[in-house]
Length: 253
Image (cartoon, rainbow, N blue to C red; front, side, top):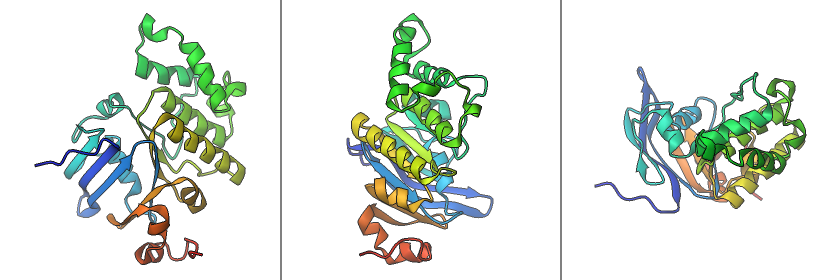
């Protein structure tokens, strides 16, 4: 009998196994992502992190295991059902439409959550502009995404996700290509969104300074296996984690 998930858990992946031919990309991986908190998913290249994000967003089918979004079993469902269950994600390369300006991207996100009828459109410009101001994008709202530097393009993708009113947000290497100032600004925005809106965030990231700064808990993958999970300080002190990262992690004080 399946145990009911805690009401504090937004995303539960249970005993997830994914194989590509003879290669086991994920081997019975179980994680739980709590509401209103940021969880980091780390591991060396090829550990299975992006595959696990694909599972969590419905883009990757599993060989075995169970996927629960706020208690709703979506195992085997198409990505559209994940979106309707208020799952949103970003990608390593921002997935934006060159023909739409920044404001139109946010409006598109709003229509995903509110519908496209007259009732759905009522007040949406005001809502979009408020969100753009909150994320520091008001001044570039009428510009196309390809005119913007990478840091702002990543933020536009986040804004579109937030406009869709997600309960769970998956971030795939959001700091890639950003300088330190851009990364710090991005970290502050994500932390505020999780705390103020109660969004569960699962962050895949190689920038360990960013991960350690904003993640309350960590999951560590190595060759498709979950080798550690728990509070950030506890996990980063784990011997197997430090060996997997070959000294990337700083020694505990």
